[in-house]
Length: 140
Image 1 (cartoon, rainbow, N blue to C red):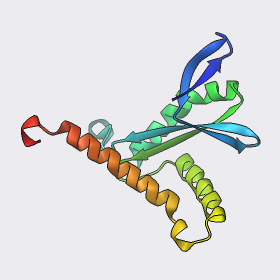
Image 2 (cartoon, rainbow, N blue to C red):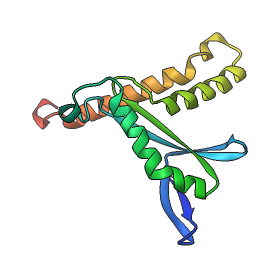
Image 3 (tube, helix red, strand yellow):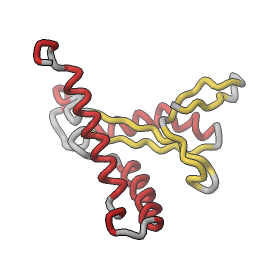
Image 4 (cartoon, rainbow, N blue to C red):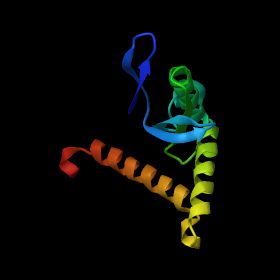
């Protein structure tokens, strides 16, 4: 997590980002907060609606951290995804821009799907770690 200073307290107390991207928007740095959720979160209360959990996670992150980033002259990017592979709208915009930059710097066709293939691999790796952590000790 990246700490930002809280102007009212005069010291670094806020932790709204997992990644800081320099010079992202109009010379401002971007605080990127990564959030992975289960698409079945809230399933009992509202019934299952595809993409609902990821949209809710995105809006909660914006509500929680956007103002702190603005107060520190930073842009805020919530990168929310669910374990079925859905991405929130801000995540799609962010990753599309990153992919354009990667495309402009890669001269080989293998580099074209780099960003989204790495993201997919990272989600799968995280899911595998969660499943293994929940296995009963007798199965291990």
